[in-house]
Image 1: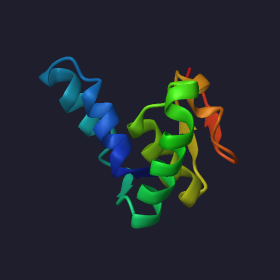
Image 2: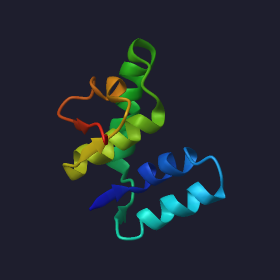
Image 3: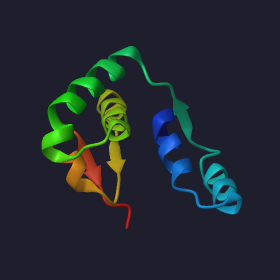
Image 4: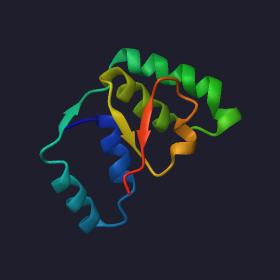
Length: 95
């Protein structure tokens, strides 16, 4: 499984305490974490400029989407609404 480093930031930001942070990092121990590339940054900026005000997408969501699309990965999220505007992006609810 592959995960962009920006997604790791998002997961850690959702941790409410050290126990949750440790559990999250443990679950990521077998995941291949890849860097954000310059093309991801340019694409994320374009989507943020286009969709932030009209659709409420955040800048981290734009980075996650750009990396996922480059890697041809699905984005597992509970907030599929923000990601719907990204062309060609595959999303899936984790549960």
